[in-house]
Length: 397
Image 1 (spheres, rainbow, N blue to C red):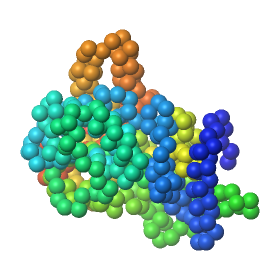
Image 2: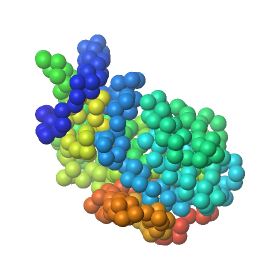
Image 3: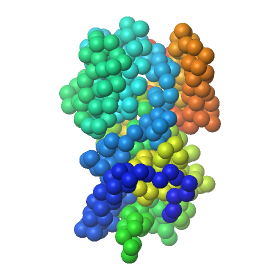
């Protein structure tokens, strides 16, 4: 597959990608074709070479994509408004754990918002395995936060191993988990692999699925009440329950908020979505060539929120709400957050905030395409916004 109308990387970037390509080729030559999930894992997380492990700018207008948190302060202010009462209820020893801190923009804005609400966590922990991103986050937050707030920050490279109380937050994290690709042929389940052709180029290859993948696909069919047509191709995350247990298993009391793009299961696996949701992001462009310069682009698949709800339940979490991002922000008081952020701004600042609100709220932008799923543990009466609970769409799961 040829990428069309994509900017050409510079010489340094091409050399970087060439190192990862060589590693992938060596691995395939030595061990045979890679499951697509293994290829995706290496493209994103190979030490020093993967997209999230290396030094290229990823977030914001000059990177490859823009998250809700990178648009400005409003998203973080809304999250703070929605969760601050629960954080206060948890008491002075509560922590905040952010999975994957991006540029550090969310941590900056949410800490300032929590401080204004007298709801600061004892520690703000950022689980960031990328040394390069960690350095960027530290530099930004040291420069922009008061010393007392910066002192509450702590960087970790694995989930807490001892019990803790507080808030777990993950924005656009699950979409970057390595996805298993499957297809159907003559009623049999096949898993997608990455192989090499005679010229050493990466090509897709389907192999009969093992019991784990085949069982996961048959589970989907039972849940959907229909079998997949031959040729139907999509993704799943058989590792999601184990991942959820790893990141949330030690949360003794508190809340877990996941925001990402995706669908409930019945919409994710619609017959017309027969090519799946896998895509690549490069320089603000979305395309389908997953072999385009490995290590220089993000690879992502939408989230099956029904699977996320199941994984949360298996990890002992209680589902509190499932809503589109727009409804979550509305319930969290986006109008007030906008007014607070606009105070003292010049015309350019006001305009930027207006554009941020549009991106966050419009259905065709992030308002409906992104979903928020909130879990609790040990908080039967968590003080959540009433409008959030009324907007709950769990029946669609």
